[in-house]
Image (cartoon, rainbow, N blue to C red; front, side, top):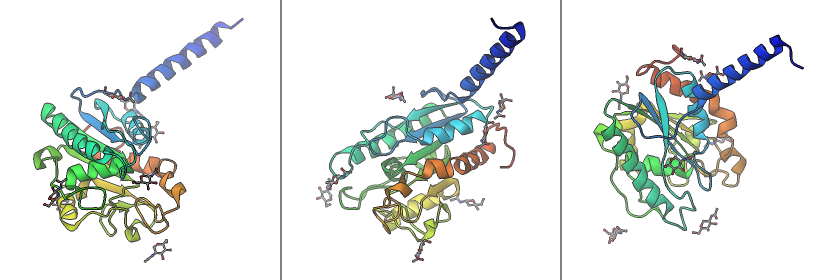
Length: 248
Ligand SMILES: *[C@@H]1O[C@H](CO)[C@@H](O)[C@H](O)[C@H]1NC(C)=O
Ligand SMILES: *[C@@H]1O[C@H](CO)[C@@H](O)[C@H](O)[C@H]1NC(C)=O
Ligand SMILES: *[C@@H]1O[C@H](CO)[C@@H](O)[C@H](O)[C@H]1NC(C)=O
Ligand SMILES: *[C@@H]1O[C@H](CO)[C@@H](O)[C@H](O)[C@H]1NC(C)=O
Ligand SMILES: *[C@@H]1O[C@H](CO)[C@@H](O)[C@H](O)[C@H]1NC(C)=O
Ligand SMILES: *[C@@H]1O[C@H](CO)[C@@H](O)[C@H](O)[C@H]1NC(C)=O
Ligand SMILES: *[C@@H]1O[C@H](CO)[C@@H](O)[C@H](O)[C@H]1NC(C)=O
């Protein structure tokens, strides 16, 4: 029924698919590897959430060892449940725990929407806004934070305009739903400004209160920026790990 050549071609294709799949598979694990990705999904999303797509693309182009970890939290309505408080605590605890357990590893963090809120607040200090409780100090220590070599926010409720790391469509005149307080900006900027991208579309009602009903702008980051975000991440990792891309 099949020629020998067709069978050979078919099995080569299977081999190629198998090796592609194994290069692409980003294992859910906290084992120590060269580069550990940590992902915080947005409200109501299933684990791992779309930043996984970005990091999966990055990992495909790396020779260094990689895996990923979900920030564990409910991702339910932050104004009506304890999701924000649980998430902020866990983001801080998980980043600190991995940094302590794996001193030779580098960490890359990606977060979307409420995920960006909890990660940013674990890094910079949180609260200080209606629904978010009293203002708090950063949960991730300075030393542990230095293990983070790239950090990406998408549709960040804490978005602040005119930061050097703002990217997207006109992100420099957009202000998020819960803009960071000045001490939080100072903490964030002094520790993470050089390793962050904060993707915001002007008019995304979460990172930019300008047109709060533009939900489509809040859900467009994957399709609009996956490649740019992956290339930037690879570039940041490049200095610390063996990546295929040279100077993307
Ligand atoms: C990854 O592992 C954690 C911890 O075991 C688990 O809670 C989470 O659901 C897993 N994520 C996926 C996408 O399976
Ligand atoms: C990156 O390099 C590794 C090891 O050389 C290789 O297996 C992998 O296919 C490369 N990825 C791409 C996208 O070129
Ligand atoms: C979240 O809860 C608030 C009440 O605290 C409610 O006004 C809002 O509509 C809820 N959001 C969603 C998306 O359900
Ligand atoms: C917030 O701060 C106020 C004033 O210091 C204090 O009374 C209150 O207990 C704090 N609330 C929480 C949840 O820590
Ligand atoms: C912000 O950017 C939007 C989109 O380009 C524009 O319509 C608006 O006028 C700008 N607002 C300010 C204050 O610059
Ligand atoms: C950011 O990078 C610049 C240029 O490499 C460096 O001078 C500066 O100290 C860095 N800032 C932080 C906060 O690491
Ligand atoms: C990674 O490799 C894939 C497959 O070769 C390629 O399509 C993609 O553009 C690469 N991504 C980056 C960020 O280099």
